[in-house]
Length: 155
Image (cartoon, rainbow, N blue to C red; front, side):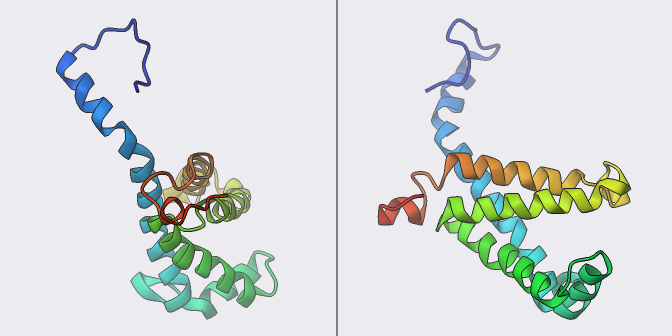
């Protein structure tokens, strides 16, 4: 299976076989990377790990931007990132988790809009990227290398 036009000639023909062999791993790489990179963000919110503010600090910040009760939002977001990230990593309930991440990131984009685009200025660049990764996982599903596939159930 190739994702390029069959009439197109590769500049380095030998790489065509490499890309074809690796292509089935591309969705797995996106799913696993998305999941694993969400986990530390959840650990920041839930446990104060990696310089995070923990539930109390995250709840306070969320309330300051209008999400009340902040504790419930902090808990939900932390669990989504931590537990949901682990679930994406192994491919369990992949589409529902990816859909939840997508919704959360759409909200995050809206809260970061006033700061502009760039993440290092508090902008929406990173939540937009996370949302697009979640959309990709939602479209692709767990795939062949997932718990969903192993148990024979996928949404």
